[in-house]
Amino acid sequence: MAEATVILRPLVHFGVLASIVTGVALGVVAYRAFSGVSALPNRLVGAAVRQIKANYVEEVTNERLINDALRGMLRGLDRHSRFLDRDAFESLQADVDGLFGGIGAELALAGGYFTITSTVDDSPATRAGLQPGDRITSIGGTSLKGKRLKWVVKSLRGPPSTEVHLGVKRDRERFDLGLTRALIASPSVRWRWLEAGYAYVRIARFNKRTGGEFQSVFAALTAESGRPIAGLVLDVRGNTGGILPASVDVAGALLDGGVVATTQSRPPPPRQAYRAPPGDALNGAPVVMLIDGKTASASEIVAGALKDHGRAILIGETSFGKGTVQALVPLPGAQGLKLTTGHYFTPNGNSIHEAGIKPDVEANPADTEALLAQALELLKEAPAASLPPASTR
Image (cartoon, rainbow, N blue to C red; front, side, top):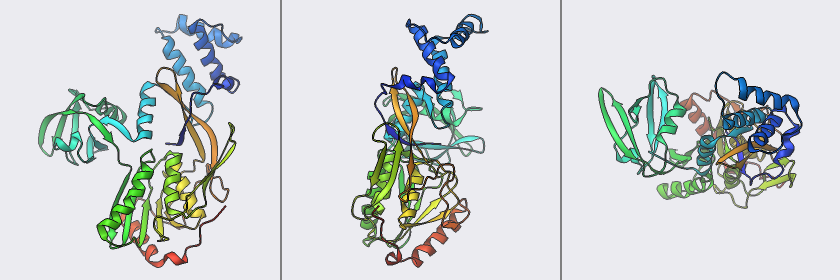
């Protein structure tokens, strides 16, 4: 799952992790052996490295051995920590920034085809006339039959101003398109009116742009309708997380002060509280939040904060239950680590790790139409004055 992530400078004390798992020793031994530095006094690991280099059925590069050792090292810590090679580090950084080089089209695998579900306004995809429902059949002359979505997304992305050639199927028509990649600002927040006065906001991902986008939504909604927002449905179903500051910004926009979350970590400061600023962007208008089993990490920070403060009614099913925070640690060679550095707690001091957040109202999260109808009913039955005041913990 995606993480509530923070960005750290390279860790000077990284080597102290060597005592945690044998894989760490392998990584350090391999690195030092290959770089000409004396190896750690571990005969078993050293002997294994020499045997692999000398006798494995295929020649193994030093880079592969080091990277595989690092992957094993991080897997041995917990399921959310991992080593990021160049491609993975670049992709995660793009997700964090909300910016990447690409064509501006979202894809899903539907009916065996990689199908466009939406396009970004004023993007290469939109300007080329690509539409939702179009099926991409080839990239750069390579058929997509048997390819994974991850490979397709990676192939569509690339430095701005570079070319990518697509084979496209639209109904019974087939045609080729050449597009020039551009810098795409991936929208993480989308909104619409459900009916007069009642707004729907969907957050797909928490990145560096999410807080600003979320705040701007309220101005756009008010300007479009010419009236205050009477109630909000906030949808984070399927949102697997993102960065911690963005979740604090979103929850903070709906709270009038108080604690959003606290984190407990080993490096100083060991415990840190994240607080909402004064002022509620909705002036107390009621909020219903939609969650499901994939709602995780940064999404759960928002859900936990709004639930503990009595600021929102949660509908759906119990969330994923990821209560740890990861740091994105750069390493030499444009690589990095995603390393678990702490646990977070809701304003009431609860850990949701491996337990999740239970909704106030259980409902089938896959039935969007019924869920929105129920949310609207709850909003109309819950005037702002009935909501408890924000906690000042």
